[in-house]
Length: 441
Ligand code: SAH
Ligand code: SF4
Ligand code: F3S
Image 1 (cartoon, helix red, strand yellow):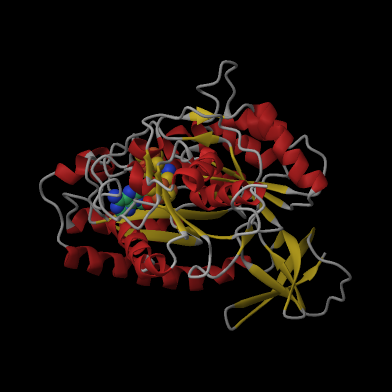
Image 2 (cartoon, rainbow, N blue to C red):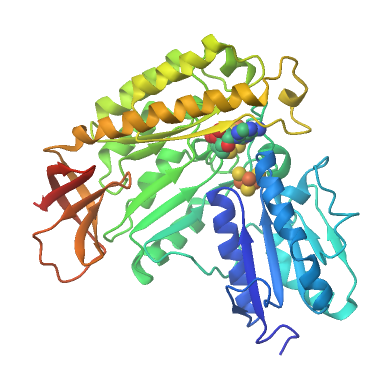
């Protein structure tokens, strides 16, 4: 019996897939204290904010929601509020959790979330505010429990941290250096998820999955890891994110093409279409190289679904630089584009660059890109016609739907099916009102 047994918790998550998965681990930790999850942030006995600081907007959102609980905490002094993750880990963050925001009881960083249970138990005894942020990880990378959000797709971490130091990005400062899990532990986790828990998609996570294994005693490449995981028996597919163009070699393209268990989809952030800006961003590739990778990918896997991240308004981005990004979108024809306005992050080199771009210009540019992408996506529907995709079959509102590796839905109106969550080949035979329809082959 511990003091949290039978009490309720609520986890609020901001940021990337890695943070979403981190929150699944946090829920696992809280459930090992025999706590129960609730949707009600006001009534929860323990509230955990798992934060992100990639852009100022993400920080402001978290801060406002943490502040909104102040009154609730005053009325319920026994409530425990925890803030952890990337925001408190910053050295010079916009909001100072160590001194201000006194209604927050426990403040942790990114390197000690696995020890959340111990911190909560200590707090229950002392009732004294805890602020503990480590410079580096000390605890084991392997967490024990995990309460997953989804029953079809499971996230699996393969590498933590980042060594790339893109000049705009805060991640290397708050997540530390690259640390790969061993192939054996990843294999065991994936095997369990597929064979015992019935997961259909496994999404391998890392800030840069292509760096996987470089730091291990027994050096392994990401392609080798993928091939190894594909030996696991079962009806499942592997996705992964994020890939850095600099480290994406021909071996990965070959492995993706060869292995039917690897989903034919790739998120390949380009950030800018201008080689000058890419250099200033410290991305280590130019646009010629990026386009070459895209050509190779499309040649090897004609049905591949591609997505990207773009930053507009990086310091020094001229209209000409921006138009190169605009043209790149037309060239690649991504299935999805995530475009962000550059947000200066204190402590990163680019925040100190001269020639920062004003917010209005950033806004105009981001909207221009998004408008273009909308047109491209509409136009892209044509490419599905008469093609066959290996889809996950699901039941949506009473109709069978095949979901492609890239997430496109193909309605299968004339199909009487018995169960769902299995893979089958679906041929697209119609496009109407921006919806695809097809038949099972
Ligand atoms: N590791 C991944 C992405 C991590 S962050 C990669 O290398 O691509 C996710 C996205 O946020 C980035 O791809 C980038 O487009 C965006 N981003 C990162 N820092 C940013 C900043 N300071 N301002 C605006 N967008 C940023
Ligand atoms: Fe940030 Fe660059 Fe690392 Fe991605 S690769 S997390 S953008 S520093
Ligand atoms: Fe945000 Fe941290 Fe992810 S800053 S994007 S939650 S690594």
